[in-house]
Image (cartoon, rainbow, N blue to C red; front, top):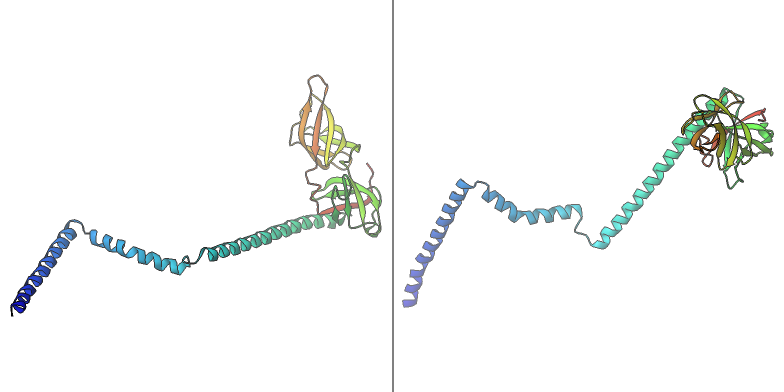
Length: 263
């Protein structure tokens, strides 16, 4: 009986303690809500945030193993490499298409014949090209050869049945007449090899890098662009170095004039 009475006395005490605690919590919560309305939302967010992040990680697949992530990364790198190759191919085709349109347009209004470049220097020989047309297209030794933009670059040195060898005018020892600079100063250009030329002019003639060089014998067609001017105060002449406005090592197509034009 004594045990039952003691137990009955403890029950009201526990209930009172719980009620007191709840009251304290309610009062504290009311005070905090009054003075700091953002306290409880911030606390709830802090408690729930880890669960939100875990849910997001599962959705994004970031809970996978390092090996799986490495495989995905390698797969994406391969896809990116493939995309870059396709992009470069498309750009190359577009460039080739533009060049062909320009050359074919020029060929349709002139007696020029379009030919593809099969080999470049040094594979074809020093300052030489191999093109895919020859006797079958009516080519002969001495026919002038042009790059896009009517840039004179060389002449046919040998014509076979279906191919021709083009000797570039930049070959060492080649000489011909040109006009240099804004004043169209006459000079004799000499091939230096590797697609470069040199010429001498009096020191009092104003020529600078970027000036055009024109071909005197072929209706002032473009021939080159000045790269640099070498001058020695002790010499009455200055040396002008220039090159074609096209890269002879990257030519894909050329135009050939089937008329004999030795210069």
